[in-house]
Image (tube, rainbow, N blue to C red):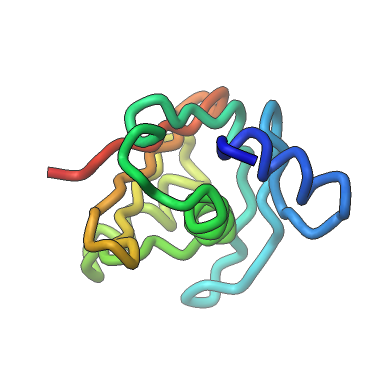
Length: 120
């Protein structure tokens, strides 16, 4: 298993992944008394695949994003994300990986895709 696609495919077959690579719906959860539930669409990892990042760690942060965990964002940005789930605006989260690299995850407004990028 060398890519996140391989890991996602394998974990999905085992029933342990909460997202599908091609189309996904996040599990519902309670956040600030609001139910988080949104599609993340197709996951694009091109920008981070050659950075020596563990595919398992990428899967974990995608699952966190899909469940409404916005990572290292402040309170104002987190509340904006909570509102964006309902209003159909883009949703963004940022996570620091174990190797120190910060990854930005953006689900586009139409929920057709979620992109991972190295955060600057």
